[in-house]
Length: 340
Image 1: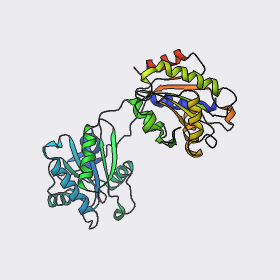
Image 2: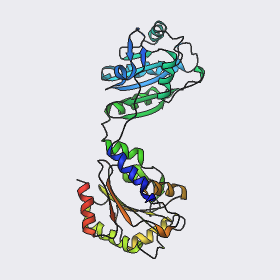
Image 3: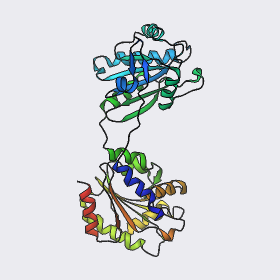
Image 4: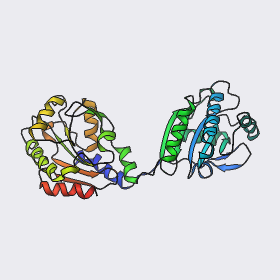
């Protein structure tokens, strides 16, 4: 059934997430040591990577001075943190030239300034998302990551050194995500939607992240399965007890967002005795349709919407498709089992 293809892709993604790979480009540092970029500099470490060239007279002095301040502030807490400056002008920036440049900024141990073959460096820059045709147009971005946990952020290298330092510290403190959680954050949209109370929420960050979820599709003027389905979910919420709204949530997404405004959904939710932790969602057509499409719930004709309930543990994986009008206690037990 075509409508469920996105969900099948989701289940596959949650089973085997794959993190981006940083290439093992051959580089040379300011001391002339030949290194493999990923294996020798990034692997197993927290890193902050910026992009400079030694003859730059505009942003590079600021970028490099900020790195010096970050290294100084890290002090004895540097631990496994490494600073890496990649030359975007490797033809000119020999190791000796980089060494003199590093000395100007008192670069300490743990700060590698690297160069290499231009073609290979250009490939590395492309892999890191910072390739440019003209070195003068290079980015002020600092790429900060923890190879162990999979945490990666981009911040402006022209920002306060305190901002860079805080992001580095956050990266160093981050914990590894499970493969399922990593796949979930990549798969699920984070579109802004509205609850029945008119609250703005982001679909993944505010409702799904770290939760066990029960998701169904409905619309308030439905003369068919929607009322029996919603009444059954009201029975499910009783079996969930105090877990509802804590680590388990029910999400009912309208397939008719134009008619189903927050106030309309509020009246509908109240009619069925929805408790905190049960969200009825609407929003712009584009945002709602985007979420529905990812979940396999989008239909051209609202009367043809699915009566399937999607139940899953977003953090650890484990997903089920159940008829939303099935035995309420059995549905609740599936959710409680997945939430263990």
